[in-house]
Amino acid sequence: MSGKHYKGPEVSCCIKYFIFGFNVIFWFLGIAFLGIGLWAWNEKGVLSNISSITDLGGFDPVWLFLVVGGVMFILGFAGCIGALRENTFLLKFFSVFLGIIFFLELTAGVLAFVFKDWIKDQLHFFINNNIRAYRDDIDLQNLIDFTQEYWQCCGAFGADDWNLNIYFNCTDSNASRERCGVPFSCCTKDPAEDVINTQCGYDARQKPEVDQQIVIYTKGCVPQFEKWLQDNLTIVAGIFIGIALLQIFGICLAQNLVSDIEAVRASW
Image (tube, rainbow, N blue to C red; front, side):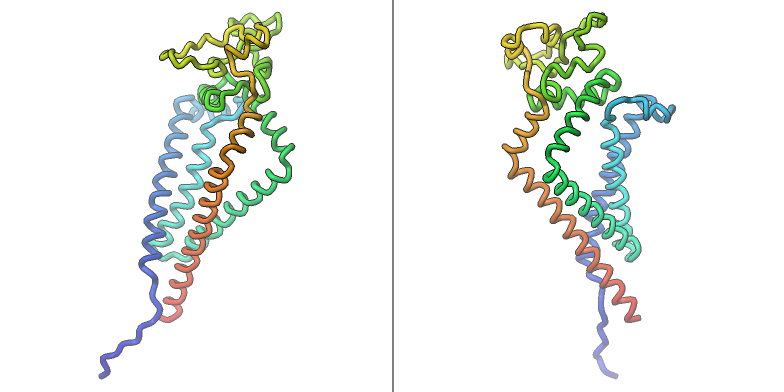
């Protein structure tokens, strides 16, 4: 009897457990994002009244957690279980789903470059639409405040965009104390102040333009975002290229694992 044994094709344990370990992280992150989103909706009473989802005139930031969490959960589940159980259907689904996301990102990037003016108009419309709904949702309010503080801006193209909000507009019928003002996030910051003065924007737009520049940011968030993008173009491009390479790498690994599994099964 010969001591030699036939050695057929084998599944690469390195690829298998790399895909498994990487996707376990994605799976749990997806669960965490979904949990945060559902908790936020529960706190706002949305889960007890689903129809209220459409009540908000602006953008609900909770959707970001739910959509990103859902995508990460589906990808993580398919990649993790597919690799662990050597399930070619789940691995192929993982590859196709990741490929679709990559294609959508690539398409969005090309369209954003080709239709820059249209994107700018849509961004203007999006910001103004959310300005109208500023007081309607605490999460949206926090998102707008963060954006204006981070980019040191006010409104889409200027502080007067806050005329769109019923609490801040300058009409004679507006009885709000915030009339002709702006949110505190529009105010220029004094490094010596430790406590935020939430009333710093009161009556700010009633002052002459020269005085306004001392009290509040007068540049809009759209031009400030464009400036930030130009100043950080290399970093932003590097991040997108890195994400794209990771996606391509994940697709290639999953396809290699599928080929190994099918080759092993064919040899039985």
